Length: 253
Ligand SMILES: NC(=O)C1=CN([C@@H]2O[C@H](COP(=O)(O)OP(=O)(O)OC[C@H]3O[C@@H](n4cnc5c(N)ncnc54)[C@H](OP(=O)(O)O)[C@@H]3O)[C@@H](O)[C@H]2O)C=CC1
Ligand SMILES: O=CCS(=O)(=O)O
Image (cartoon, rainbow, N blue to C red; front, side, top):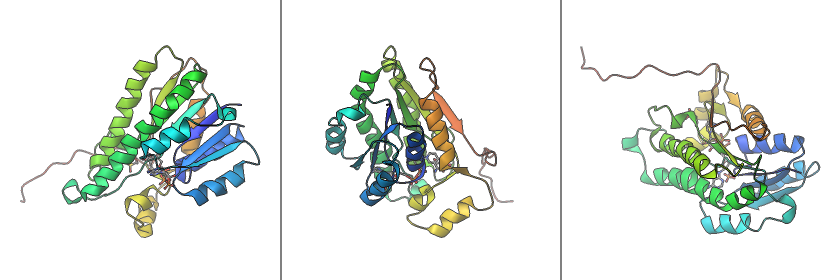
């Protein structure tokens, strides 16, 4: 039975991915900080497949290493790692941001992702051909926008780290993909605005954003491609989203 380790399974893409992979009969290792949500998902999905929940903060490298290097045998070797845990904070301009918010994004989106990857790599290498590392990047890692500052830069890291991992894993059979979604309706904006439900609702109102299930379907597709195929980067936007023109600062008339 193939197995998948999903970080950030308590909400959004991670939760939808857990449900999608369970539907296909994969064993699940689900992580997140909110234990009650993990337990609720476990009771929902353990009717279908073996589920292991790990209450973890990806920023805690000792806890990550300890939990992942002691996975029960029945979840090994690992077929797929989905590095999904992440967040944006501080939508305001860089010059107004609280430094702690920058640190939190770096610690989660970069250090956390690196912690999990380092711990899981031996388990993926033990699987070899057909194993995958699927990293959640973002369009923000490729395209700059006001208020993107450290969030976008952290996702640019995810892209380059994914490409560099590919170079080192060449010959092992382990694949690496940077999956880069655009506007998607999850708890992402609620987190970014520190709980402002109205701001979150307003962002998604009157348009047709991606849904968590859309991304879960892409993750399942990437994980089940024929073993000789590696999609390096997959950027996906809703049809109703595109780029803006460049801005120019002009003198008043
Ligand atoms: N929604 C969007 O528009 C887009 C999102 N993304 C990326 O996709 C990923 C998932 O986001 P999305 O599902 O939308 O957002 P959600 O806020 O719905 O989910 C984020 C998940 O990450 C987990 N998480 C956050 N911080 C930590 C931490 N320190 N340790 C462990 N888990 C953590 C949360 O779990 P808990 O709080 O329980 O720990 C939660 O399960 C992120 O990396 C995000 O940057 C990329 C492009 C677009
Ligand atoms: O990563 C999330 C998508 S966006 O908010 O940067 O457009």
